[in-house]
Image (cartoon, rainbow, N blue to C red; front, side, top):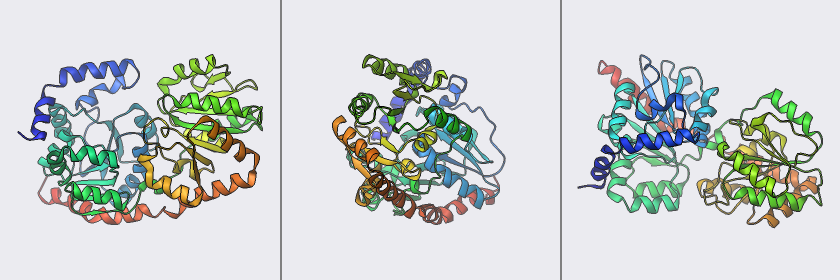
Length: 431
């Protein structure tokens, strides 16, 4: 029996356990209780009439970079509707006010065959687009079994992911060879996809370069600017467990040089804010959590921005940004968002998820790698003290972000013939 068949048989028995898991996640705030049925393949919306493309973006980062592609597809194909799926509460919140007309969001069902089939029966997409690297075996194989043309866009295949897929070579080849077009972020990742059986592979670049700057609320920004005044601000963005301790140590070390420093922590998962606040308070910091509505005062040392969709505000407030997930074996997060908004960039040594971007930034002097709190505090101190140094770093980062903005054109041109064929094929068949 093949690996895919074993996986399917195992997941056929999974719904009782999946129900339990979803309820536990809901209790922790990791699932939307009002829309939990969507995770079981039960839709909360009717399918729009006409042609429908389905795009899946796993989480916030993929969702943000997909917006420019969604807008382009809807602009070019005027009768098209787009179903956009994600798997996290934060990504759903991020998309809520950002999706254009004729695009709508649903949560992706868990990869139980019964739930997958229910999802596909209802939506009956004419085209499927997977963003980056989240490929659920039942969902992908069932989509292809139904002869839905499938594209893999902005594909990311890190060295560690490649090794994992190679251990499941039969399943990998079955899934990846079914994509009609595979667009990788880099030449190296394109080669890995070819080795796993992908055909029609090219590497037009990373779509994240073409993403619009993070949105923000002007009124909220001005209110925070008024509360902060002339205080120097830096932000630790998308932090994971363990990184806040390093940020705390760096903040303490900087106080002798910058006594009125304000440090902003934007946790990747806002539900951790209470735990973060407790740890920081135990370490002697005066903290305020944004979700409580309490204002920033002169005594506020660390501001915990535990709200959704506001990172664009804090990048605009800060002169320096540390990119989280890069010290905690998470592969890092998108530094281009900070680069677009005028921040000098620091990150840890683990930027595997954005390796090519991190390398481009480093080559231009647009980002610096830190491995410890002393390194972090020393570099932040230098950047606050030397405005010319800060300006050179921010200009270098902005240059990297700007020079590659044409990626969306290359991506669209690569997929347009397949999209056009897919969207006319079913109509011609009389469906």
